[in-house]
Length: 75
View (cartoon, rainbow, N blue to C red):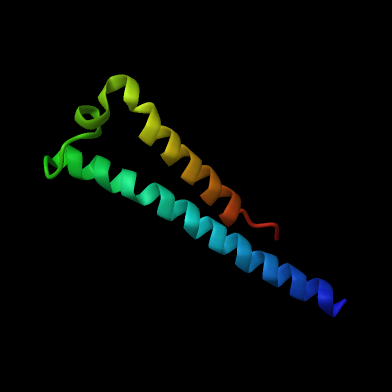
């Protein structure tokens, strides 16, 4: 019984780590988008072009999905 509780706590820590990794994947593109709107850096549209926006959008969605899996609570 004690091992099951420890295993659950360990998986909860791993899921939390996975959630933070997902947010770290997403954060640069969110910050770049906001800085591009303010004119601090070139916008993603200028760098990637309209068809190329799939690249940062795909990476951002991937990071958000990983974060959602990591922060999902089984309790």
